Length: 482
Ligand SMILES: *[C@@H]1O[C@H](CO)[C@@H](O)[C@H](O)[C@H]1NC(C)=O
Ligand SMILES: *[C@@H]1O[C@H](CO)[C@@H](O)[C@H](O)[C@H]1NC(C)=O
Ligand SMILES: *[C@@H]1O[C@H](CO)[C@@H](O)[C@H](O)[C@H]1NC(C)=O
Ligand SMILES: *[C@@H]1O[C@H](CO)[C@@H](O)[C@H](O)[C@H]1NC(C)=O
Ligand SMILES: *[C@@H]1O[C@H](CO)[C@@H](O)[C@H](O)[C@H]1NC(C)=O
Image 1 (cartoon, rainbow, N blue to C red):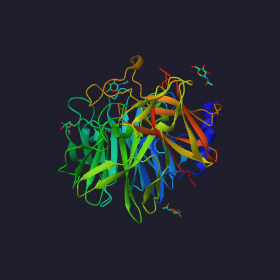
Image 2 (tube, helix red, strand yellow):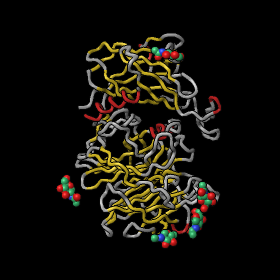
Image 3 (cartoon, helix red, strand yellow):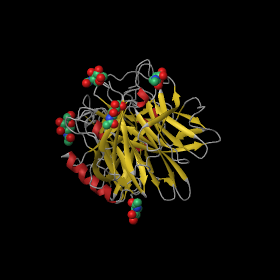
Image 4 (cartoon, rainbow, N blue to C red):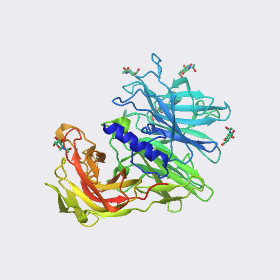
């Protein structure tokens, strides 16, 4: 029931998708969830191609590599699987790991080359796979899976220097005591085999590496190793790929865990007016990997100060031709003005927008309602700013205490969102763990009536353990796309 409703909403959304909305349910032009995790985006003859791990509902691995195309980085058309698993194949059968795929054009071969972390299900092989195709969307044909320069390779990245066209593999070399490095290794001219080690990020024990290049600098972004739980992504800077590289620093506000995401890819958009740098992160959902979302954000880079920071915006408008982007302005409704029912109440919270947060949200009888909301009659993005105190950091991380409700790692609460009291249409709002006192937001696309008389009611839904909704600070209603 809910699924089919969401699908209908998705079709409506796809018709005028234009804004980039980090953490939303992104749908392709057919209304299906965009399913391309930990991959890369390639600009080819004016079209963007997005490759990523295709996750099957209820399964961790075995889906192969999907591919989508777009003219604007916001509207995505599905082209099926670029690399399909093959039963009985030694490296790409559905039981094997095909992770972090990256596609690059090879001038000398005239083909597209796809590289990825190739492994068995216990991560015992630590290889790099190569498949090739004559056309960018594929299908790609398996070539081989090899050990890079005889060594190990786990999380995989690929970087091409825009100045000289040279490509490099970036890979963490596993969790063993002998490993825990990240390698930057050049490819041969054809991008068919590795050449020489350019640099080794020695013993930082990081993963999910990617490099973004500015006029003057290279910045290498990587995450710590906490599985599907996000952590503080760091960056290193250098004038040259061979180093010296700087000390790493944290690229997003502390304790937001990089706005609940993991690094994986970065995209340089050289527009006619400016160059924009995008962080393309994954928001893994270990409860249902196939629904994991994407956190794509602009990066503020200052080569003189030698800094790089991610900038959070709920909704932004990117023009890939000019390179220009603008945050979209919304209208804010604060906790103080909401009404509560049942055991929900307003509580002092000095970190909240107006010193008060809405808490005690539970099931469908302890709810909060925002009234007098202006709508347009068209689908609009609404961001829900929340705090979910079910910390899930590791014991050894700053501010982290294990979240062990019922003895299980739990990455999110789920709230119900109802517009104008219409309980026939209940939207599900995923609210991932935040640290205590840290407020993050999740967007939903809602259709409000035209005029100022709308209500939005938030309750708690079952997340597998409990019916608690996260605490609400405010909501922001954005203008429709057109
Ligand atoms: C590039 O795209 C244009 C149309 O957008 C097309 O006419 C042309 O053939 C394409 N070139 C290649 C090499 O695919
Ligand atoms: C993966 O490969 C390693 C090395 O060959 C092997 O020891 C391990 O048993 C393999 N795991 C699986 C699940 O096949
Ligand atoms: C695949 O890689 C292995 C290991 O590097 C090598 O021995 C073998 O010759 C390669 N096979 C092909 C078909 O290139
Ligand atoms: C393999 O990787 C380890 C860890 O980075 C390194 O110490 C060793 O020198 C590498 N071996 C080769 C042959 O490159
Ligand atoms: C309210 O929640 C109860 C369970 O707590 C459930 O049985 C009931 O169906 C819910 N009512 C509505 C209208 O969703």
